[in-house]
Amino acid sequence: MNFMGYIRPDGRVGVRNHLLVLPSVVCANDVAARIAAQLNGAVYVNHQHGCAQLPADAAQTQRTLAGFGSNPNVAACIVVGLGCETLSAGGIAEAIAKTGAPVAALVIQEEGGTLNTINKGVKIGRKMLADISKLRREPHPHSKLILGLECGGSDAWSGLSANPAVGNASDRLIREGGTSILSETQEMIGAEHLLARRAINREVAERVVAIAKRAEAGALSGGVDIRSANPTPGNKAGGLSTLEEKSLGCISKAGVEAPLEEVLEYAEAPTKRGLVVMDTPGHDIESITGMVAGGAQVIFFTTGRGTCTGCPIAPVIKVCSNSLTFDKMSDNMDVDAGGIITGEKTIAQVGELLFHEMLEVCGGKSTKSEELGYGSFAINRIGPTQ
Image (cartoon, rainbow, N blue to C red; front, side):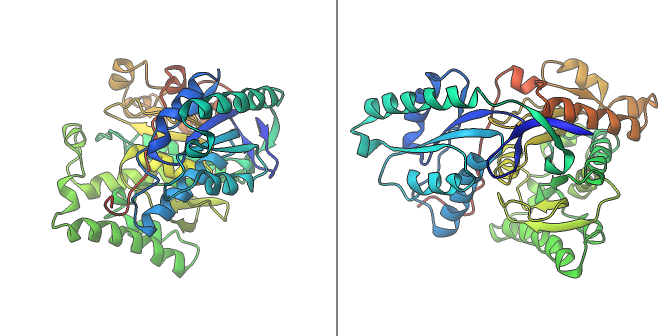
């Protein structure tokens, strides 16, 4: 069985064919937005980073922006910078160019101001759009897929229906040679030992425990318990009582079969196929951004309370834990896993449905968030702005 996607110069496969306009710094957001607005079919992201960051933060932002622009769903990219920022447009474009994808860098101070930059960007973008419109989908093996696993607005049913059903779909993909990224380190706390038992070796086991400890220590260093923010008020209203209970539900998205191959830092690309963990925060949008920057072409996003989050360049498939929320938020939900709760369907049946839904979406079917034009973007920060 194959999926239909766009082959890229480096051999990776995209499930979308985007032209991305990417600001290297917050100061270039408006210019990037105006370029994208004049290019039918282009997408852009807005962010507050790129300058006044300590070295570790700047390095992580650079990795995230370059990774986002390098995602195989991006067929071509225009990077827009100001000219005096910490992260240069040229440096980000150079990293993206290593994939072989078409990329251009524009610097506002060098182009003579915003209007000149916008005009040049639109001219370049029109040529890029004409070229990528000629690309066609072809069949590719599942080993070319990287799936991101996310949950948000969880309720008491999430860990019993939507999450294990996604885990079943993840196991199916990995059996076919694909890769799944489990995210949200803060929501592994109290269950990290269960993931460690599935590690391929002691080093990976110790690493997954270490990132969970690091997440909790980060909150304690600020004089607070992480449980003061997680579970959220909505989680509690939905029936979740503790972080540990939430974590047990979170890790069920990783299925039950696949061994844990490696643990990645935020926005790092997997070096192995199979199940991997990425150290992302519990913040849904920051987490999705990190996984997509790491190469994930498609996201499963489970929810019980409901969410409308999308991603600018990767389709986000919303899987609802209960039929009540699914019906109430039908504009935003893609798949109803509530039949597991009522006994009408099994986890395996919904898992199979999700697997085929993923393949259809990868082949071009729109998700609800794509139909609505939703594309949230946020980069995780390590330290304060300087």
